[in-house]
Length: 280
Image (cartoon, rainbow, N blue to C red; front, side, top):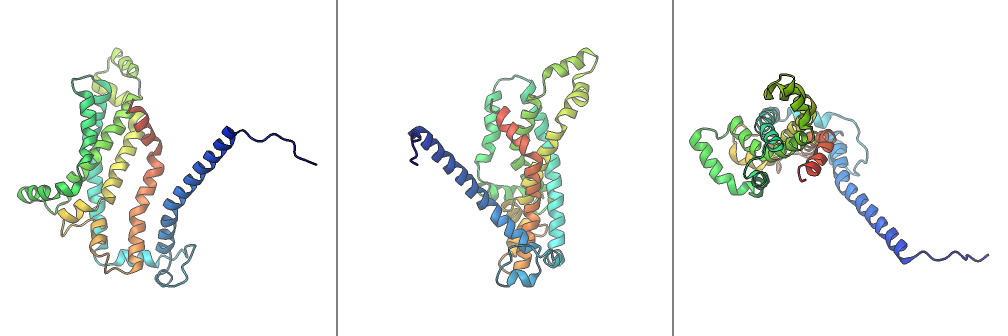
């Protein structure tokens, strides 16, 4: 029996082809990102003999020997503790400076407001290697070189633009009428902020804090240039990368990637809100 159905219009065929190419591109992008992460955790959760042996495993052996070897490696524990201290201090500094700036941008009108928003983003236009030498000289003169506080100040400046934009979008999404209602009931501006605005914005502020934590956790250039004795984990791994055995490299990589993965699931909707609201 002959098929007498009419051929698909050219527009429909082009649309199907475009949809197929789009889905194929998404699939390739997902594989490009997830496959290295998968093999990283496979090797981190396998015994050292399996990491260096062939053929390579496709599934983790759930052996913690590589992780234990990584934690017992000389200098790793101190570097890990330095990373935690710098990241926590970075988180506190970036939120302490970024949240008030985001609130002011969302609630007040002042000359140069739009220019200030652009200026906040432009702070990321200057590559860190360009600033490394003057930063190192200034830190040596002020006694901040090779200190947790000095490195946290640099990392806070890297995280500050994101903290300002994220909190700005959060406060912009909270109706100002809620604050005005609190004012009419006798609250001051500070009381209205603490009792009305802050509880609504707290999840987003926490997400912004996690973002700052991950930026500091993964930053390596400033940590390698500005520290010698108090190196963070990223700088320590960079310093010993050429002489480290494979189990140490994979376990260290997994320790660095895990916070970033947690961050993605924790703050994804607030990042979408940042670009959807803050750019209006």
